Image (cartoon, rainbow, N blue to C red; front, side):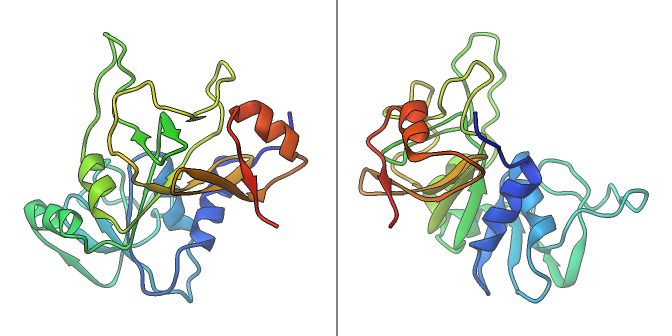
Length: 214
């Protein structure tokens, strides 16, 4: 298997594609790392479901304020001009199409852009819906950040999702530890590859009819 990016490196690659002036929500878990890699000279307004606009990176160790947290209850910082509001207003922003990008984790993403990230369907699994469904249908672009393979070596990028769906045909880009995939109109195009991964290896791992950027 080829050299892989670690989680912070995946987050940095996501941050690279977030443009100046974007309004962005970072889903709980892995996507929260993106806040730590946004360039300081680029204005990006980070939004949280629990009612914060203008979230900054994670605080330094020992400087955490647990009265200032994101939707995943992780301590965060606030940037100058940060605003706070009722979570109902926050969800109205999400559902009303006012976010340019959301970055979510996933159990599976289909080649059509379907997203499964809240429940594996296992009888003993605890569902974790949060605001993912609202973000998936409300954000103008949905980025997914995940490792390509499960622990048992199965691709999370699949022809059809086998887990309950969070959103249908909503994902536009998938960032993984070995490659970045663009999903448009049922076509999956590889736009970036890392380490010594090859096109043949990606085709084998995913089993999908991938396209490759020239």
